[in-house]
Amino acid sequence: MGSILRFYILLANTLWTAHHTCHGKLFPQRTKLTWVNGIAHLPEHMSDPTFVISTIFGGVDVDYCHNPSSMTSESDYLGFVKDGIQASTHVMGRLTPEVDSLVEHLRDALAQVGKNGRVIHIAHSQGSVITWLAAQRLKPEECKRIEIISFGGAATICTSEFPFARCINYYAVNDPILNVVPSAVRALKSGFSFGDGMQQEIIFLASRTGDPVTDHGLLNPTYLEALVWEGQRYQSLFLSPLGQMAGAAFVGPLSSTVTWFPNFAYEITRRALIAIVHIFTLLWELLQATVTRLLGKEERYDPILLKT
Image (cartoon, rainbow, N blue to C red; front, side, top):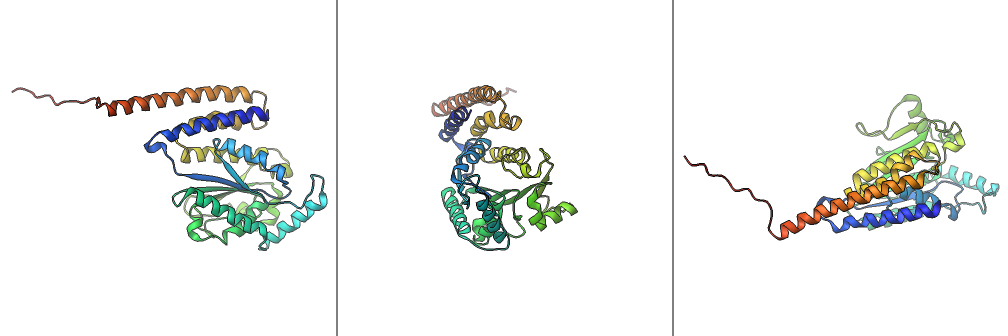
């Protein structure tokens, strides 16, 4: 299944590059997607979430900033405890090399998109509190070009504290992480939403599994559903019309088959073919319009003179 998905993502990326030959509104604002993980992530654990995020956001490149783990293997419980202790010191405001790495990572992403671009940064669990600490090191003009999307964060990140372009914090209502995030608990109890105007910056999600530990996982059903919605929002705002159609062939079936049902490959094949037809139709119409303008054969309507 993994090889099939990677083939379709490669196809989506190929289709996505087609819009770069077009002009005008087909050029969207330049963006860069990044993400930082929570505890207990070994280096080999980074590729699958990165691939899924890329798929959900339309096949665009995603760079990750690895928050290293003290674990040496998946059964290293002592390393897991060390990770938890380190995360608690982050909550208390302790700066560590992980914070420095994320600051550098975000600044590199900002340099890639330029002064008019936008960085979309996804953080999960401990990665959110590391992002919160990194935000204290960023300049206001840097924050204004970054959007923060946090899932099950060990800290809430809001525009009332940092001038980010956008902040959104998702929490499952039974996520155990809420035990160490008083601001989120207050919001849950009071129904109060942080942020300016109608922008809601803390959103609580009903459990999709009934298991608190499972609900905390970024790629488990509760947060994955919100991640898919964010991917659709991203595509509607930052991908060109051609890029949106190519991405729709992949995000649609993913949102309806988040548990990787066997019909997934069939669905993305069908939708990919539909997207290809639409793309070539648009390109053909664009070519016709361009040739018409170059040859000076645009339709003209001469005024009719009425004889009196």
